[in-house]
Image (tube, rainbow, N blue to C red; front, side):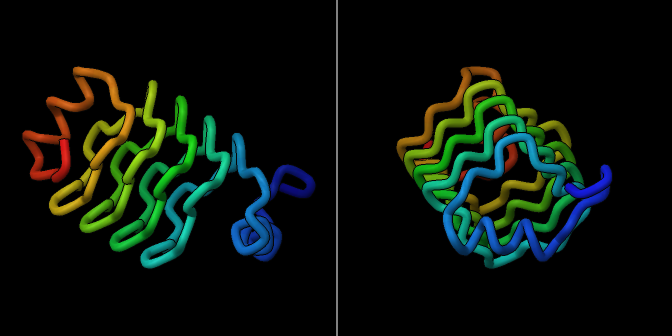
Amino acid sequence: MRNGKRDIREILQKVYSHKSLAGVDLRNLYLSCMNFSNLDLRRANFEGCKLGHAILDCSDLTDANLADTDLRNASFKETNLTGVIFRGAIVLGANFAGAKVAVQAKKYLISKGAAGL
């Protein structure tokens, strides 16, 4: 985030203090078990991330990239997932109860073992 590079410390501080992470580049990071609930994650790039058991409840992930992510057993309850890219995502056991998700994405998630849809 400084000089075009990701500052992981700065990103984690924003997560813990519940500040916006809109547009942040989180590609290929290990973020399993982290709590991202109630965060602004619009247009965030999570491509290739490990997010197993992460909590993203009530977050706004509008137009985020979750391609090729490991989302096993993650929680997306009441999350805005409008325009999210799920191509290649592993969603087995992930909970999407009450999430706002497009019809095509919903079909994909169900076919891959997601719950709560």
